[in-house]
Every structure is written in structure tokens, then in C-alpha cells.
Image (cartoon, rainbow over all chains, first blue to last red; front, side, top):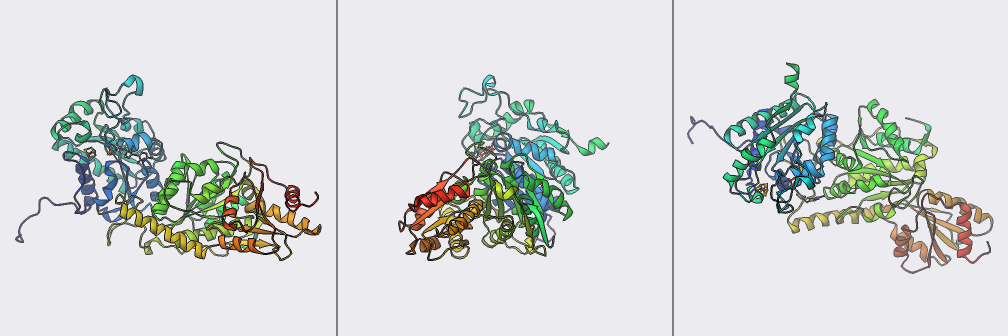
Length: 253
Length: 358
Ligand SMILES: Cc1ncc(C[n+]2csc(CCOP(=O)(O)OP(=O)(O)O)c2C)c(N)n1
Ligand code: SF4
């Protein structure tokens, strides 16, 4: 490479060289990248600590160049609370799936949000349990087929999918709650903006920030990658509207 | 906090943690130990620390996990049902080699049980409680002063072995008021920045991970063997016990821990006045257990029997039998559910064991 060449695209410093284990077409990798870019751009890598979930992203610590803790299933917000209370000078984020956060970890997330823990939660909603092979999640769509709802999710038996961003924004304390998607380049650009903002708010000392990200699971949805991304836009997005539900900067304006 | 103070056990436990350098405490209310939180909620801010009242003991355990990952000293206290809920995090913290201290002021169980003193969580504390190949170091004080001293020791041992430590007391140790003395100076010797494992930000070094996940069975076995090696070192170096009125005149040796041991001392004093010589073996470290020491005492010619007395239907007695290895008959007496054996009951049981008239 000659000296006057310009780098226009490179691996964020916050991401390691390791190759991810995610299935082809899975958007976990895209979300990792925009989290890493946000940390880089805000200069937070060296004082960031992530909390890994139990789910497909359980090995996320292999892909990041930051310190990490690996939490029990659903408990990441409690670990993040303990850590941040001891080290308020550090940047703490959790990365959690929908089984992790909205099922087994519902107690931990609601209370971390309500205490206003100064952490950032990246909540990956792919409407299914990916890691354990495609069982129903609390976020599984009505009539969606999973291995534990082979005839489709019957809302008369198990209720409707939980809208986490809306649920948490009924709480008064949390500072920033948003939902984004990563199924098209345009949505990725916007998701990046919002995730970066969540980290910036944490850096500035605001309390609890959460970004729900609509993500795909082609493997367990039984779709090819392009059909899966289309399904996010056509089926998930109408039920899970994108947008910012709570924003401290908007309230001030 | 220099000089002698009259304090309730639960409050003294809180103050001892501060002496040990703790500034962060996480808990959920439960009788009979809520006074620890009621004390630390105002005391910790005085020393620049913080208390977080968690939403559940499941969360408490996991907050400890996060807090301990910073390398700073941290602890919680609870009572039996709460400790059951923390078993998830305890197993994870053991697997991740995290130093942390948990206090269980035991109440009667199983289930919701009752709120009066008991020792029925011996198995849970000493034999595991959570899943997997791990151990927790367990210390059992029998007075408020000893609770203070063992709290401070527990933090040192947790750091030394990078393993969870548990202090178990029955409701009596938590509720009783006694005069106590605290060490003169606060200990703030654990500097996380100097540690080679704590998470401090990967600024000028490789990223660190605190985890218990090893999908490769070779690596998981390696981690378990690393743990096992620590437990071996604990067995070699951290045995603690106390003998009371043990002599070659003893016909019988009582084995008891915690509050129960204190009650047995009263019975032993009274029996001595009647001319019946009995000694007391009081394990202080329940894990590691004073195995060789019990075996040696049981082997003494003058000892006819070992009598284990507990506030349970008999849990430590299984360890006593294991260690005595059939050298002498091992008998058991106890009450459970919050009923505490009285000195008179202990005396009656001793006389019965020795074939003496009541
Ligand atoms: C206590 C406990 N219960 C169950 C499991 C099994 N388990 C592992 S991952 C998972 C679901 C993960 O799904 P999700 O959070 O949606 O993440 P995804 O894999 O879809 O990214 C379950 C149930 C576990 N590890 N621990
Ligand atoms: S199973 Fe689904 S969520 Fe998991 S890596 Fe594969 S596509 Fe992604």
C-alpha cells in the first residue's frame, strides 16, 4: 500500500480479528460491528466492559477487543449493575437476546431500568430462541412456527409478543429507549446513529439506555438470508414499530 | 471504630465488612438478617460506598458477580431461602474464580420454614448447593466477636484463593447483642488495578474475560482441576477448629459448631461439676473440614463415643462419621425448626450415651 492511499473501510479497533460463528445471513454480526464502531468513535474502548448473554451471542467476548463478563442466562443487567456501581467511571453494556432479556431475565432488566443504572443495553430481538434450536420466545410473532409451537404461536394460549421497548418506556426513570432494525443498509445506518447516541448518553452520565434491535435468524426461521431480512421488514416491523420511545434530549427541547 | 462496642451480630457483620475494605453491598430483605442492610444503608455512604437493594436474591448474586469482577471487595448477606436463590450466581462465581463473601444467617427450613435459628443449611453450604464441580469456603462463628474476626478472614481467604467464601451463622449469632472490638485500621489493600485478572478496561493490555464457560471439554476439565487444586490448598492451609475442655479424662467428645457449640460448653461445664468429663470439638472451618483432627481426637483411648449435636435433624454428623472412620461410635442429637437444644437436653443425652443415670 502506498503512503497516499486513504483507508475508507477497516475493522473497528473494538472488534477482534476472530471470525464469528454466526450462521450466514444472521444479523448478530452487523450489530456487533455497529456497537464496536460506536465505542471506537466515542473513544470508549479502553474503559468499556461488556456483559455477554446466554444465547447465540454467548461467545461475543471472542469478537470484541474490550473486557467482558459472561453472565448467567438473563442476568446481564444485574452483573452490569454490580460492576457499574463499583466503577462508575467505566462504560458498561449488556448484549442480550430476547429469550435472555424478555423471558428469564425480565426481572433483572425491568429493575435495572427502573433504578436508572447507568448502563447501555443492546437488546437483540429475533423473535426466537436461536441457540437452543428455534423454540418460542416471548417475542415470537403470532402464528409464527417454532419447534415448541409447530402449529404457530397461538395467542389465545400464550398471549401476544412482548414489546420490550414500549414496556420499559412506561417506566419514568430510564433515560433513553429506542427500537431500530438492521435488515437494510438504510436501517443499519440509522441503527448505528441510535446505538452511538445511547453510548454517548452513558458517557455523559445519563441513566439507563436501551436499544432494541430487530434482528434475523434465518436458520431457525427456516428461511434463506434474503427472505429472512424481508420478513423482518414485512412481519416484525409492523408489530414492533421503530423509533425513539424515550429521549432525554427531546424532553429538554 | 476503636474500642469495645455493644452490638447486634448482624450490625457487627456489616461493620466488619467495612473494616475489611468493602464499600459495595447488595442485598434483599429477609428475617433474621435484615439489620445488616439497615445498618449498611447509612453506614456505607459515610465511608464513600453504596448499598443497592436488589429486586431479588437472584439479582443480588449476579450483582455480586459483576461487582467482584471489578476486583473490589464485595459481599452480601441473606437467610436460607435467599441463599437458595443465589446458588446460580455462586456456581458461576466459583467457576469464574471470583473472590466474594456471602453471609447466611440460617433460619429453619425447608421451604419457607420459619424465622427462628437453625443449622439446616449445612449441606447446602458445605456440599455445594449450586451445580457443578466446585466448593465454597465455609466459616461458622459462635459469637459476635468471632463473626467479626471471621468476616475479615473470609475476605482475605476469598482474595487468596479467588473463590467464594460463606460465613454461616444461625439466627442467634445475627440477633444476639455482645461486646465486640474491631481492628483499628480499615484495610484497603486490594487494588484492582494491580490485579492480573480484574476487569479494568483493555486500554494498554489484552482484553480480559471473566467467565465460567468452556465449551471445549479439555478446557472445562482444566478449569475444574484448577479449582480442585485450590480446594486442596485450602484443605492443607485453612483448617480451623477449637477444642474445649478436651483432656485424657474425657469419656465422650461432643462435636458441634456455631451457637450449638456454645450451648454445649455450658452443658460440659455443668457435667464437669457432676464429675462427668466431656470435651468439645468445634469445627470453625466447615469447608475445609478438620478431617484429620477429628480422626485423631476420636482415636484417643479415653474417648468412648462421639456425640454430634446440631440444630438440624443431622447434617454435619455425616461428615463426623466420615472422618471418624468407624474408630468410635458416632451418635447424634438435635432439634430443628427453630428449636434450640438446651444445656439440660445436652446433658441428658450425654448421660444416656454413657449409660449414666439421668
Ligand atoms: C438457566 C438456563 N436455562 C436455559 C438455558 C438454555 N438456553 C441457552 S440459550 C437459550 C435461549 C437463547 O435465546 P435468545 O436469548 O433469544 O438468544 P438467541 O440465541 O436467539 O440470540 C436458552 C433457553 C441456559 N443456558 N440456562
Ligand atoms: S441460530 Fe439464528 S441467531 Fe443464532 S447464529 Fe444462527 S441465525 Fe443467528
